[in-house]
Length: 243
Image 1 (spheres, rainbow, N blue to C red):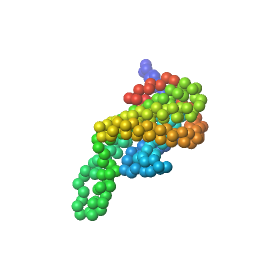
Image 2 (cartoon, helix red, strand yellow):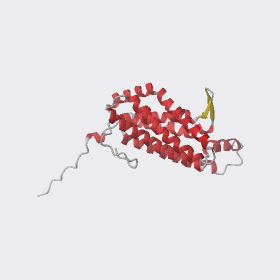
Image 3 (cartoon, rainbow, N blue to C red):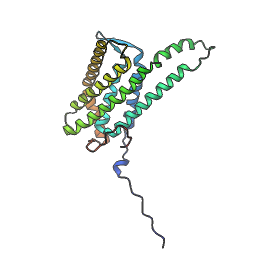
Image 4 (cartoon, rainbow, N blue to C red):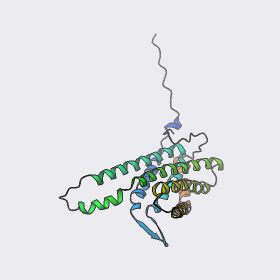
């Protein structure tokens, strides 16, 4: 008698769930991250009498996306987005260095104009590149971790405390790593402390100003996705891509 094969074990429906807007939020996060890192550092701006890098005006928006992702989809899915952003930064850096070091066509006069521009935008010292990578990776994971933990502690109440608190923690880690790694020995210690303090305060202020927008986006996504994830049993290691 021929044995009847057992049917394969089915994956729980919850693990097969498809979110309508998760990929869109991921794309927005990576776009803001790349633009703030590639375009922003090339220009300093003055706003209300304060001088700062143009990238600092938009980089905090990536933390807002991180808050939205963790609040709605949970830490594990946000972890994938952080790794996607980190990988995109590495690829963009390598691609930029490759392009500016390729031999230019001497018969094309426009190359004499575009080459210096490309060098300004894409070429950074190795210290600044490493500092940016390390600061982003550590700061974003800190932001998501604090956001997820605070949601469980508060029982999902008082969203503003989580968005501001997690951003304060994440941006502190980001600034405290980026500037010493990138400029220690080049800047005076007093100057570095002032820059770290100003950038931290500025980025947290952006989060506070965008709090109503964050509330609106989070509420809309929760209704559309029918999701409101709590990380009660989550493995918080950053070195995993499991949901």
